[in-house]
Image 1 (tube, rainbow, N blue to C red):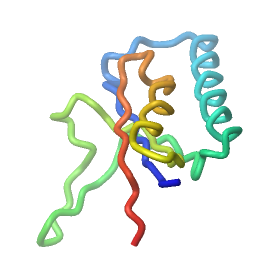
Image 2 (image 1 turned 180 degrees about the vertical axis):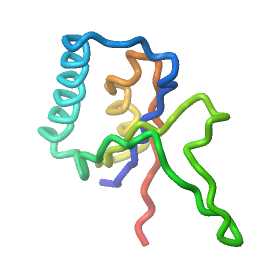
Image 3 (image 1 turned 120 degrees about the vertical axis):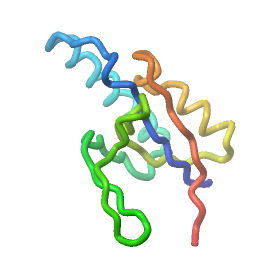
Length: 113
């Protein structure tokens, strides 16, 4: 099996404010989805949510604030899964809860060094 990185993106500026009950329901959907992948033995790293702040180091040690405000989507988090192929990884990614709120999932094969 190969490792695949799932990168979760979302335009958080257009996301409606959730009630506590809605936020709890979404958290449960995420936890259930991750648990389902784990139960299949296909979860390499649960990953984490990412904060919406950061810095970028450019050539010549130029440091700028990030993530970039000129892009609509922000990186919200990541997970690493195991799958036999891109198609199998895509099938797993199709169940990601971020898709239900207008986000997307980037699927990238992890190259072993």
